[in-house]
Length: 241
Image 1 (cartoon, one colour):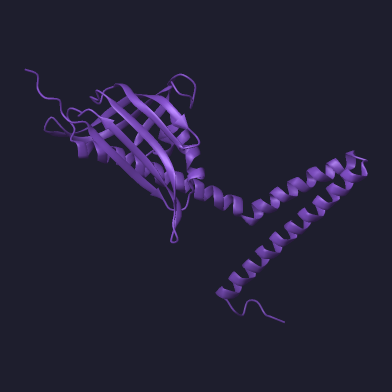
Image 2 (cartoon, rainbow, N blue to C red):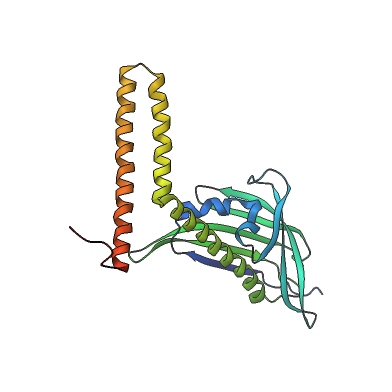
């Protein structure tokens, strides 16, 4: 008589991004072949094995080092899996995959990764969700394997949010904004020299005036901010006439 089948492992894991929106986080999750880029402290490497990047049917290779008790001894082992992308939905911000070849001992595992918004009166951000259904894996306890996946998810969330935050700071930097505005101004000035159409000239002149004012406003705001900081550090440094 065959032994009764063991129940499937079913897990639904999450990690919160406190600042980033779902729209900002999804492109990172969608970049299926570059998982290691966003969880470098957990995933050693990931790359395309076959197919077209970010298209259903592709297979990615992922490798990670797991330190745990193996056969009664604490050891570190390099684990690898091939994961086939089954479906990707940019509207729902979700993708699904299944594990094929591997050295982990996985017989079957079907996973889903998604991101959804969090919006309440007290906070606004998003949640990364990683769920899977798998046959029991030899050498692992369910909660142990779930913790391994949770570590990847938590690392992804932190690195994605750090990347988005750094990008926002760079974009909002007054010097960056001023430089962008100056570049647009130079382009419009060059176009103004090429055209003789009165309506086009009028439009370009209006745009140039608006950009010049924006540059002036940015520099003025930055100057006031700098003066305020200097005055806060030394009230006698700046005198008010």
